[in-house]
Image 1 (cartoon, rainbow, N blue to C red):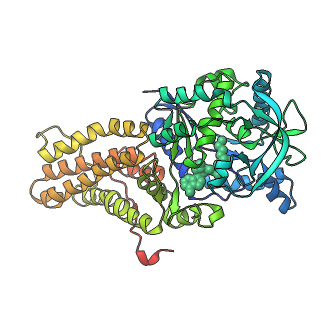
Image 2 (cartoon, protein in one colour):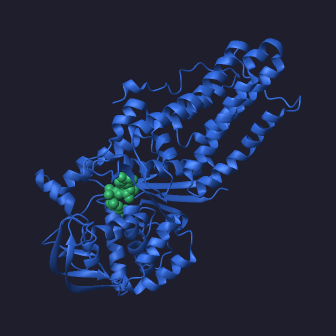
Image 3 (tube, protein in one colour):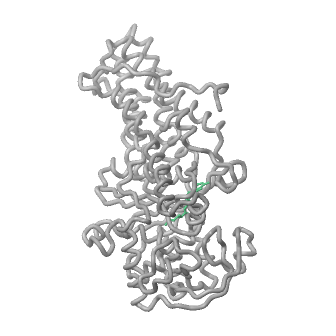
Length: 494
Ligand code: MSP
């Protein structure tokens, strides 16, 4: 395959405490990035922080800190969490970095020179919480908080000019906005006339942002600044070769809450810059607690650190990937986490290693029996070998189609079949009467388990490496190992 694969996450508001929702998008991007790396693709995985805007300024003021000191203090909360979650990004952007700021200014100047930015006085409804002007209809939806009427002079980006072109683009590129129901939602949204986008804030009201290069009285609207990270970091207007190599992005992974900003604001900005659009914008659903979105303002967040510390990072990564059908909402609960942990990881995956390792150690001197061609495999073994043979390609194609939970199911199906194979063949009995057949069963089971561990490694890097180490030591000996996923006893839960 050997392609390039450029994947991004949203850059998170530095003010928020990172929760399962943020962790989910980042783990998902990491899993996709690792899958592509293991398939030989060259990967660029970018994540980071969105550090400008009114909310940051207000929070800093409350703490009597400068906004920069405030964001410098907060940034490590995300960076440390990503480290604990084993996130292997290739670059981490903070929008206060000079390498980003100078490109935002260059972009503004370019769009201004091309005639796509103009100044105008505007009176309208402004949502402080969302940091943007909203329409009457949006206000009536009741989804926006802290709405005020504001009248001021500002710079506007001619977004409306590109409306028709965008609709045509979306219609002609079914892979551009995924899943399909989100694409329909955007086409629906674009049936209404699109206004122009207010892209500045007067410093007299809000000065924590990137200065507009052609008017020192203004800073850049936070979304116009943040979206540009996707091109500023891979070298737009600074490193032509790097940029040519990576852009357009293969996928912008986002939550459904920021669909419009990505599909409409960002796409029209790219049209104005005469740059190609990202191949895919994929919007996943929300993690809910009960019926509500998990969010700081609702006070119902699950802190990922608590469950990682208690149950280990790989189990949490596995649960999040296995549980959410990409594109739909999912409920996060400790009960369902424990069920998934005990059923899939303790009883199936962990137990398979225990059985294979235990039986080989007990009855075969600890040496993994070599694979042999004769006698010809019996039916059940043939079925397993056929499954193993096609699994790699199947998993890659499911992952490329963003069907992560189905990819995991297909790997777990192999694990389930291997457990059943061992139960049916009872190699502990065979060892007493037919040592060749017993060896045959265990060598197939070990081979299947190794295949499953390699395919699950992007999701559970540490635990799968342990399995690989147990099963593939150079001397062919099973290495001693502790239980992979000890069952969680329900009484112990927090
Ligand atoms: N800073 C903007 C994004 C700019 S991108 C150029 C932003 N930041 S955010 O901190 O609010 O993060 C939003 C993202 O976090 C969502 O799009 C989603 O990926 C993730 N999630 C936050 N809460 C979530 C859930 N409850 N469930 C799933 N993911 C959610 O918007």
